[in-house]
Image: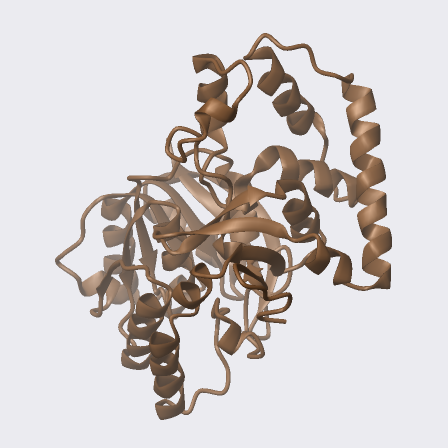
Length: 371
């Protein structure tokens, strides 16, 4: 419902969850004077959750996962967050943790009741946000509503934005170039979502249904800052994951040898106002490899594992380049892939994140770490 609720100075539209970030820190936003009993301790706590993807807003996310009955979810992080925003300013909370939880549960139940009627409530009471030149929106008000909808599987959230931000986000000329590129390539299907209203009607093969692979990765990463982290995306396809981590502040390098994927990726980067380095050679053949804190290897390795020489070079390159964590999704030979990765690299710790399914195959998503 793009443009729903337009008025002279704002518009209510649907923003993808991937483009919704928490509020800017109050000093950057120059709103610190509005914080009652501001202290440096409060500010340090506040910084933990400022200007990160709402998917990584752990207290709110875990609260609504708990209310939704998701296995392993608990409200503890939210209750601790609430206690700390008061304790760090020397303020006594107005209600106990139990009272707060009861209030939030009532609000959760009321929002669920509204959803049974339809989505009008959330368009009438939208999240408020503002465009960030980094290619995303910072929430100004409505973190709870956004988290509630996100944890129920909504991939787009009704958001009120300043009218002047709307054409900046739409970037119509660049969107038209994306559309033309897809027409030239005769694409009728995309592998991952395109985060723009012009393409909301297009089905993507992956990452449409909550929890997506990105959701699982966000849970593992927690709220820690990614700014300045070096990330390698091997086989980045049309750049969905790479662009997400660019928005999170990471320095991203992608490898994508397919010329059609690269051409569309380039246009999407321009449309979404993000940029990252892209190598068009095959990863195992590249001589431009650096060292990276985080690696993404999602449904890629199975393409090379049956060629002994390519596999050997790939694993050696992977071991040299990724020094921290490696997020991996398998092909259909799950255990064989894991065994080859563990036995031929320095990745000696593995944690399964989820069973996944994509392009007709049962897969596994997990994370490898070096000691």
